[in-house]
Image 1 (cartoon, rainbow, N blue to C red):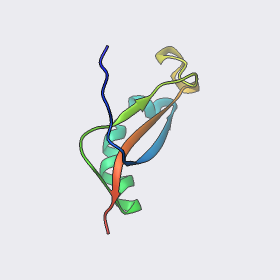
Image 2: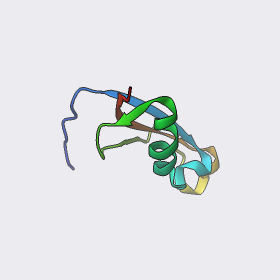
Image 3: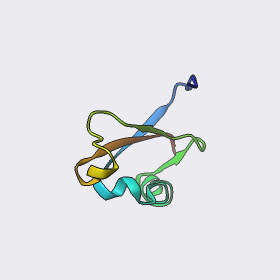
Image 4: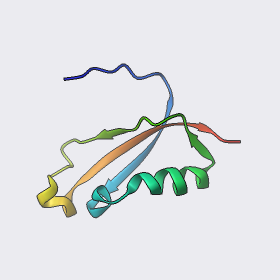
Length: 75
């Protein structure tokens, strides 16, 4: 087990459902969504949150995870 203390920051939350979980979501987030919303990433760190909504890869269509990216306003 590894423990990492995360710095205080503003995080953008991206819920991913179904097949999106296994796709190249990082490209969508970093190259499309963040610039379109006027934000930039603070680094290469991302947090993937798996909770009761994640049913496993064998039930991917019913699954959901959250991806959190530390961000700052680009303007």
